[in-house]
Length: 352
Image 1: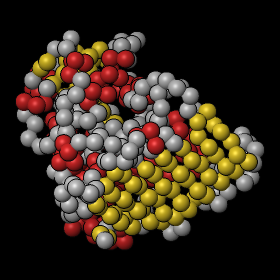
Image 2: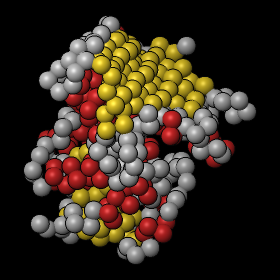
Image 3: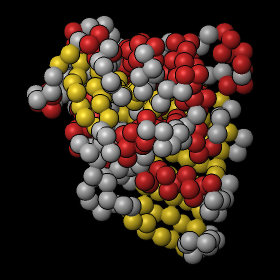
Image 4: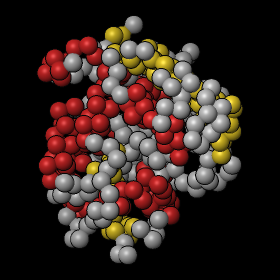
């Protein structure tokens, strides 16, 4: 099978080195023809640039060279958060399939224009919400949709970490909503798939002791439903935060608990408790073994390749992606245009 010619636009996004690692791992799928070092034109904040040795053997090119590369099959867009959509717009205008990282910036109208353009021109587009291809998250969605858990009434998620330096705190301070804006989108995407559209979004944005109050490096968001709540929490200074990241789902007939959220090249389990048996599991407590995963982004980028080849459509609609970002903006306290607010006044954000 012919390999897909791909270029990574950007080295400054927090996920940029991870995406490049995956592209190099998938040498049977992608032909990496080069990359764009966006430090030459980035105008908005980025955290840091890591693992530049990954790019040593690749041609570096200008943005215009990348956008106009003959026979290009795809790009990954890995520039700073608030520049993702403007760069993706340039790709859309050239009908280039793209994987775009998160979050989708603060200009909702521009993001909607991007999604509309990709939809009308049938351009493969994939958002970089990293838990979409996580087998544990997929199992949770399967259990919920099969009604193994009954009516879900409580979901809680912890996405803590401990980067342990003031640089990251200052970086978060550049964004309204801080860590909720930067990380919450991953779980808002999951909550929407699990429970649908919320009735209300409420955030509590804080800073940890000794950190300027404007640098919201700790926060919690509550999505309210008629009979359920979905809570997202994250802090940038939680000791051993990443290995202890957690997801808990409770329903009237069962519950699931997962920690850590992801693990690579090691045994990995989740717990499921069922009041009633079903076609696959008896009533009781189960320790469910997850398949070995060698890389965070492999399944997602293989799916992206299948979308480009026309072997599948995206499992996520453009309307889903748009609603995820509306929730993200509301959670971060970023104002929406009046027409967006009028669209569903029951969803106006409350800040306490």
